[in-house]
Image (tube, rainbow, N blue to C red):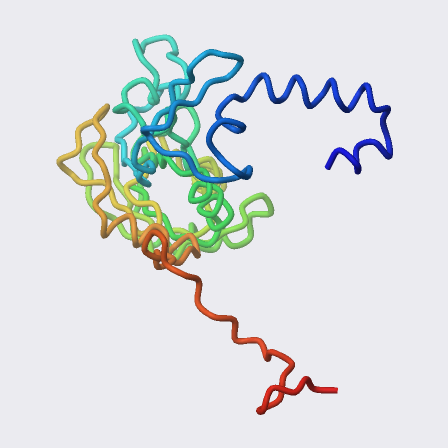
Length: 271
């Protein structure tokens, strides 16, 4: 390696570099015969004469939580009228952070999904427009069955909304308020509000109750979260287009390559 370096640098520069390197990493010269060899919890690793404290823990598990977000609660920082943000209400995340998946805006409440794995979060976000979501929408004023086809058609022709309403039904209400359940694909709460307004209907509350395969329990109170089960995590990964890869036991050999070796039977190379 020194010979390679000396092609570009002077001998003084190369020797000074290796002197500094050898003085910094004691363990490399004192114990191991070649770089890249694994070290273990019992090894004494020192940098510039100081012992390094290395953490030997299990690999972090992939976790996710579903959270019932109150309306008017900030995602990352508290807003007026709320003492904490959504992220501050969650349990401590492995690895130090929770990543929100397809978060809603201020004024929109209901199901929020958080994952600890960046790869899973990115895959879910890229598939968000293809996953179905379910909403409960409270509207003010007269609303009957005749309005439902109008809402479905309004969503289909909306130039800003790149989605559709797959199911819609009235679910009750009292006085001047009515509730509607919708199953949508590719529509966010702001899109739904605009669709209702286009039909002359005021939507004054929108609650997300499902995102992809994950639904929000009726018993989950506002401001409370719960961890997803292993089965829910598997369904979430499948919805994101990720397939679980089987793990090889530690120290196991890789399977032999299926590529032809270039030799004919009998040991001769092919021409």
